Image (tube, rainbow, N blue to C red):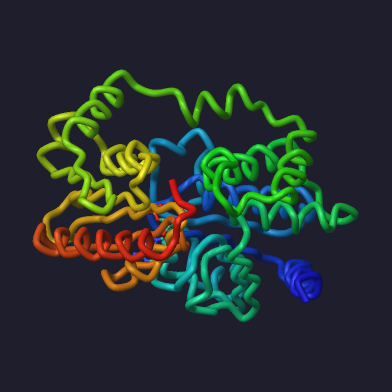
Length: 328
Ligand code: AMP
């Protein structure tokens, strides 16, 4: 079945003269790696095709991965095959013109809630969308050319989405695929420098997060970062959102929540949810969000609603701890 869907995807790629890649809003390493990596592979394998990645969004953090293509006319979309990577539902696709494409393929590892593609290849047990793209490309190595540049992009997504190969979705197959990418000559020193070197100011911000984080009685760690805090530390919204990674590994806290006020008041407060053992996608779903079992996102609109989410999370952790004993 999985092999069959991949064969159909390859057939579709062969069929079209123009292929357009799409990814999700608030780009991350996985959607950037998967979209750019697959674009590179298609370009190298089929030089006669036009392959476009048009997004209109920017991330300082991921700018080292290179720029996207310039916007094109509607007629180009209308005759193209669209491939959307790493995006669970259509509202999260960053370029709304994806809907103009003649046919659409979805390649994703989120829990399936919206099979918006004409072909949908979804495996929610995969650690990253890049893992799926790597598997796809390596599975057709006779006709798809995966060079060092593509391998670096795909490896970037595999590393970032799996928290450096630490999430529970990481399998032997994940590491075998990562190994095959490394064999293509990935420069990990440069990649990890780009991904993980920190600015002096970010560490100052980390000390603020540690100072102000809170913990509920049953074990929910949370932090709230206002627009004023972001201005005080000179942070982009994206930098501020990284606060979640500072509070997601506290012993006894099975759930971590970071509330980050969006750049303009009406946009609300972004919530990043992380958990260990206990799924949180259902909780995120109750606050206009969703995602993975252990990593989800949602939006609340004021501090009262943030408190309600914290209370709901605390109750969920209480119940979980009462009914399970294999947690840390
Ligand atoms: P984040 O904390 O933004 O990294 O999100 C964690 C996961 O949840 C990612 O895989 C996102 O794609 C997903 N996610 C984040 N926000 C939402 C949302 N509002 N609706 C559905 N999924 C989301």
